[in-house]
Picture 1 (spheres, rainbow, N blue to C red):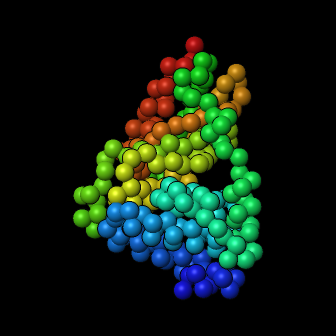
Picture 2: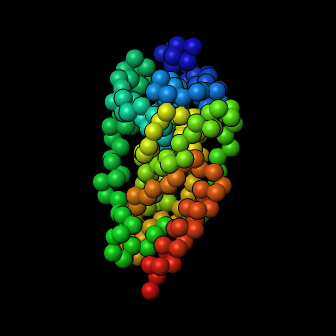
Length: 217
């Protein structure tokens, strides 16, 4: 149904349907490679609906989640989806790799970022799904010069994709006082633990505060 709505240019209705599908899968998906692919497809559909509505940042983040779950979506053909497909393809091709110019925590003179806003995950799923979650997962993300997370890349197994995707949904709303080098804001490559629970957010905040305090003369 979502596919048909997208092909017919019904962006608003497609967005609602794709969002409902994502929510359903997040709660019920049991996981495995096939599950990750299915959830990735739902996020790619949501990205197309957002692109049809002209929502660039939202569409690129949704496509980023899809790509984290299934790397094939980084280059998947989109021409069948008309204007929305062409727009999303243009956006993803024009997006420079933010990792290319990002600093590392060990850069001499770097003042690390500070975590300002950290909404935490409110994830409803079966006990079976939560028990199977890999506690060693992490997401590598660029904190850009405006303090926004960009270009998430999940490190670890995707056998249980639902908590991973739910965390990436929340990560988009995290905000930082950006890293600084020679007094100017700079992008930084950082590693955060998943899922983004209250405990994980507090540990991230403490770690960044300690690093920042240690960098001050």
